[in-house]
Amino acid sequence: MQRIITTADLIAAIPGLLGFVPADSIVVVGISDHDLGLQIDMTARHDLAASDAGFAAYLAGVMDTHCTPRAAIVAITSDDETGESVIRMVSDALMRYGIETDHRAVVTRCDQPAPYRDLITGETGLSSDYRDSFASAHRVLDGQPIQQTRDNLRASLATTDEIDTEAIELQPKLAAKAVVSAMVHWPTDVPRELSAQVAAMIGRHVVYRDALLRTAAYDARAAAAVFTELARPLRGADRANVLALAAACHYLGGNGVMVGMIVDHIAEDTELPRFAQLLDQAIRAGIRPEQLADLIPTAESVDELFGGHFPTPEDFA
Image (tube, rainbow, N blue to C red; front, side, top):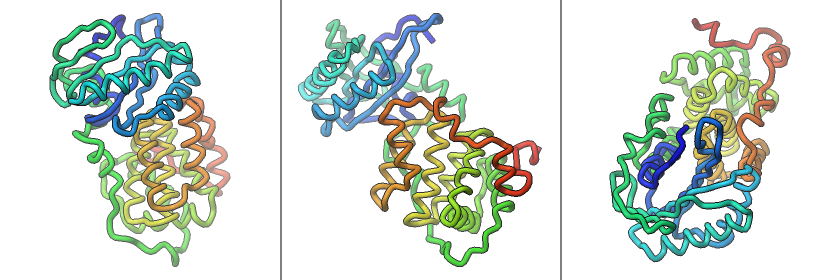
């Protein structure tokens, strides 16, 4: 935490906060005061061209639900007029909820230092390098890369050759062991046959989905990566079910950007599973990841479901 966030540092922090370098975007950063300094509570991004009064009202409502007292608004665009217009619209929507804005800045780009102008103070300057920002350092230390574009981030959801899940004999204990092993040894190769097994388990008995969510208690980010990989050779409802698990793990790991991206990705291909709908509603309602911890089943309940020991990382030490 820090006492003051300058406009230059705020712009530089955006790629680290989002996990990718945005362009032609409106970015809103929610800020609150704590004993040790300022804390960034949430970060939201939207395509600048698609930002309208409805989006601004929705975003303001979410931030109010989060009890966010202050915000910073940054338009990333070479079109000053459009950037200023969208900033004013979002700022007005926030003010209707009593949310003050500390920074309202227009910057041409944030993949490298670039000229910016703060609409509140009239200050102009050059933004800092995002690779040197506190947010980037924090993300890299957590083992999370910063993608150069949103499309690059979305590419992590790309499919591979389809695998059939119909004639699968369920082997839940072996599958659970393989999933946890993949987490412990991540990054590692994930057998396509495991994808079919996990999809069949969830498709036939939804309780297995809840049991597999236990892995989020071990390492939510590694679990999200494994379930994303497992979804690659799957299609339709099978893919949606496994990606919903990945989204839940991302959410519990604090990566809301990927949750929204996965939900959008599923919706383009098939109907959202009920579980994915609940996650989407949770984000829209401003529910924090720690408030969803009760979704993770206890070790005892998972052992009971599997009729024996559900594997833990210690089993592979």
